[in-house]
Amino acid sequence: MIVYERNDAFMMITQHDHAKVSGDLITEWREDLFFHTKQNNELVYAAYQHDRGWIGLDDSPFWNDATNRPYSFIDFPLKPRFLFYTLGIDEVQRTNKYSALLCSLLYTTLFERVKDKDVEGYLNQEYHRQKTLKELLIIDEGTNSQLQTHLNILLICDELSLFMCMQEPGTPTKEYKFFSDGLHYSAGRGLMKK
Image (cartoon, helix red, strand yellow):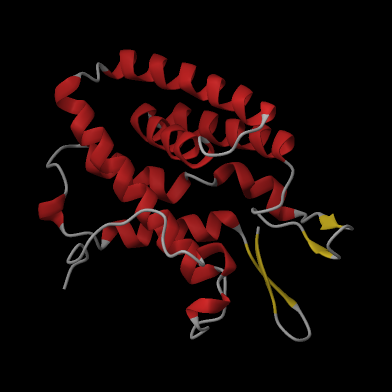
């Protein structure tokens, strides 16, 4: 759940709705910056589905007694979070292996900076999934460049969507604690369609 506070209420946006915004952003990506392969549609699917593990969690939000507000994706406990991430990627994998690989890579990229034993276990599990999927999909040096480009696009659109969903439109950027140092993944200019 993405949560921000108004004077009299908590505004709550489901992670799956945020993922829909990520997918919409990718559909606006300039085609000449994509690799021209069938995997472009699989990238779009990954963007729309990357947070599907949150669907069940967001149906019944959890209250955080310590902060006196609903848990958000920022402070939700790691162990149950990783269980649901795994379930979500499993669902994507049943439909499309390349999309699942992108979702797995997205999460490992996001959590590689976090030092915690629970994170380490999750990362190892997903590294194993990635190795298996790369072997099944026959991803070699030639297609690895495409995979990295698709991952970068997914990361950027995920972050842009979070930026749009985490505060009211028009909020001064200094109010965004999560983005106090700017966006984490830079895309450069001219990437979206005119």
